[in-house]
Image 1 (cartoon, one colour):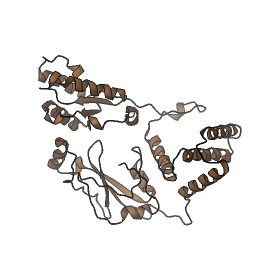
Image 2 (tube, rainbow, N blue to C red):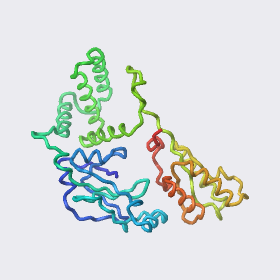
Image 3 (cartoon, helix red, strand yellow):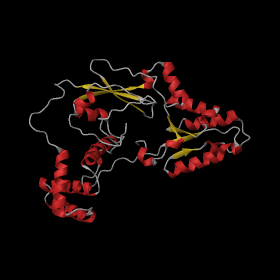
Image 4 (cartoon, helix red, strand yellow):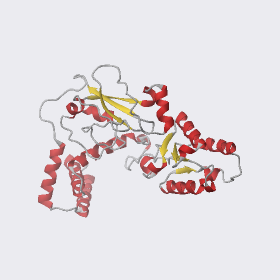
Length: 337
């Protein structure tokens, strides 16, 4: 679930749960114009709970009848419009979105939390968006427009030195917060982008693996555990093609390695073109089972071996990807160590 813009969060509960016509796109996906845009690491159930919305996720593979699920996963066709997601048990569930994941299409349902679970406090709530606008206006008038990157950094370093001498002074810590927000808008981020990034970064940190703080030096930074590289198996047509299509396999392997992935290339596993097809496939399947994902090259639909490899990957829970869709560096999608 990713969007290019972040809607206004005011009255979000009412907007998301208001009755609306369900209009799915040509591939059966569904979007809600008021669902906040967040990075992939954000847990939508946690985000929606803040606004008093209980959420539930329904996967096509487990929800749809067997023949419907097989039709989608075995065809390679992105169309899932023939799947009607089943609402969770209970009343009040609204279908919010149908979106893609590495495990196939998923549906997001939401309903209002009981009042006891979502207490509303009296008084006027703090408007972070308005505060950011106010701060930017003050800073622009007082310190001038423009990026002022080095000036902001110099000021932050000054405040950090003051924190070192007065660590219990909350105002010194807040000075650093204000300066960081000042640097963010001066770098071109709008209040919406700043808020969205703040929420997403917190969720990203929560999703990371961290060492036991009890074994760490309290005077040193605690870094998150570094992720391991994602291992990708390349699958595609070979039989009947010039040079067994090895040049295409080698080119794709080089591209993925340049992005930082650990790549298994069948053209490297079976360089002897005289080796029997079944013997090659046995070697390939053993390597595939040790991978996190399989990347399908163009034309894989015409390859019996590629069909079999994709079927095995689906059955054992290996992610199935279109090779042309893999554009992000491995560090951006690496598995947690």
